[in-house]
Image (cartoon, rainbow, N blue to C red; front, side, top):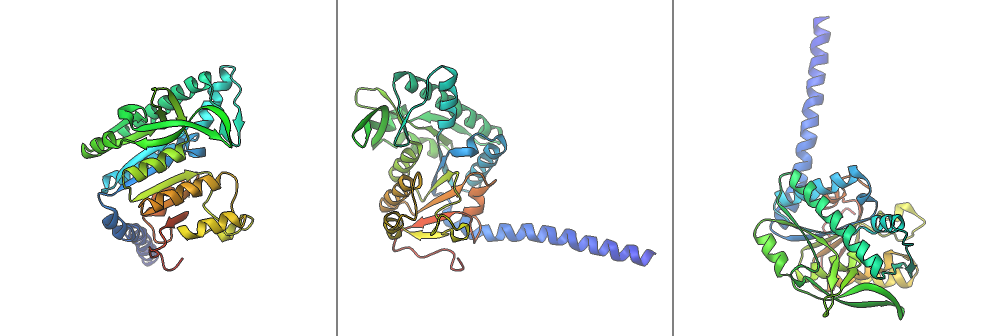
Length: 311
């Protein structure tokens, strides 16, 4: 009986040792990516279902905090469309959309600014609770996002802003002082009127202005597919020259088209890589950035070599 117990104990010890070896392998796999991106800026656009689920929210915040602590310089740009719609309905304002864009009259603009700032400060508190200094700002602060009125196929959609210029000094100062900036996508025009800016567009504009190494979009989609009807056709890496063909061939549609055009614009303005990730997957940022295989779609410049030759 004692011999059997010793065998069981030995096997148990081996299992425990393997468990820790597996953890060590994960850390070793992450090492070259930590080295490569140390002190580099990554802009994370945070939106979709990951904002409405408390567990997913904590997962995203943990990922961004870890990126900060291992040497990245993250900047979060967040949306809040679902929350704006919810509060608009509570206040008797029926949400209206034209071509998928929220029509933003004065009342809706007031609600949007209030809710986005509320979301902003909640994210700041969650980051601070994990021991990292964070500062929440809007695109109005320091004239970060100068905007002009945006039209949808010639239609007036109200106080919806298109980014005209970016003044990145406030973000540069915050990063220099070791803060993690959290940006709410509200901008101002030349007459100081507030405008609601699409969070994807704001993230893209900030990534370009800050010469970010990476731009990551957290979405409700797994990434880009060669064939949207085939879940096995996820494209792990995509050269920017391939985007036009995907769109013209009808392989992508809906909300993915403007996102891909933002990706294309960012890459052509010297952002090294853009990632489209499923924010519904816990720790999707870490899985994409720190593992060889990744889980989403990485878009890179035409001259760049693939990181993952086995993809």
